[in-house]
Image 1 (tube, rainbow, N blue to C red):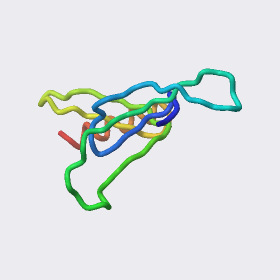
Image 2 (image 1 turned 30 degrees about the vertical axis):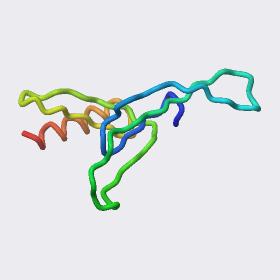
Image 3 (image 1 turned 60 degrees about the horizontal axis):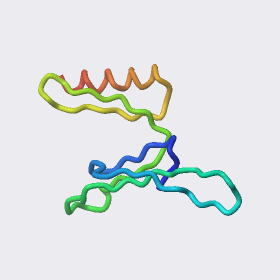
Length: 92
């Protein structure tokens, strides 16, 4: 689980995402966390497994060939656009 202003990424896509009430004895506020369930990962070497929760902002699109392309750089919006353009150019 993670706080709502972060992003969780893994090798497989999210199959279910839900909000969970965070219980904190020191706080009277009702904060929510996000719980993501990912699709099962196929058998692979452990060094290929990836899972991260961070302050990433995505930029995604579907290209002409139907390929979904997304980038998740940990930087400003101009940096996200630059990263996205490099990926698109590399795929051409």
